[in-house]
Length: 197
Ligand code: GRF
Image (spheres, rainbow, N blue to C red):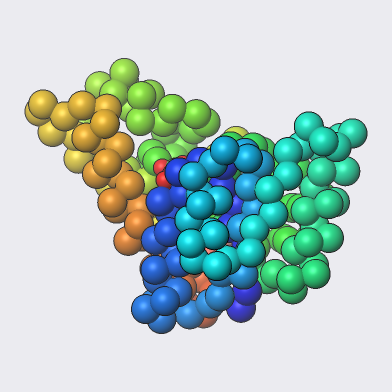
């Protein structure tokens, strides 16, 4: 199976997925990086790993539909089977959702449905929760609202800062995301649960 990763920033999850591919844990090939930020560090990671990337700003297109159609052309050209969002700071629109039904996955740094959207770690700190974590979920048209695939709890300890919590969540993300993707790609997770969307 061929994977495209969408990212906008640092790309530590992209890197973790690449490492998992190299060690054979992922069982799939990361064939393409799509990025919407020309300055993003993830582009340097892709270059270093010799993974092809496409960096295009939606501002260069007349509409979100036109932007996503351009991405879709590239995804089709590369025969991409699966899309993994890894810090991609945009909502996915109908064009991509229809082309990749239940084949677009995201990772989010909270135990959804708590703290969706931006600054999930800040939200958790401000709420004073003692446990937060991460969620891997299918992407739908909403903001972090798609069906949950897997979660991992991360405890908040006395003396923790926003940074220390974020670091602990990210370390967990780097283990969980590749493992869950591997299971999904090889049909080891069956999520056709009654009552879920
Ligand atoms: C991760 O914490 C992920 O959960 C969220 O964005 C962050 C991306 O970090 N969606 P990185 O760019 O992979 O380092």
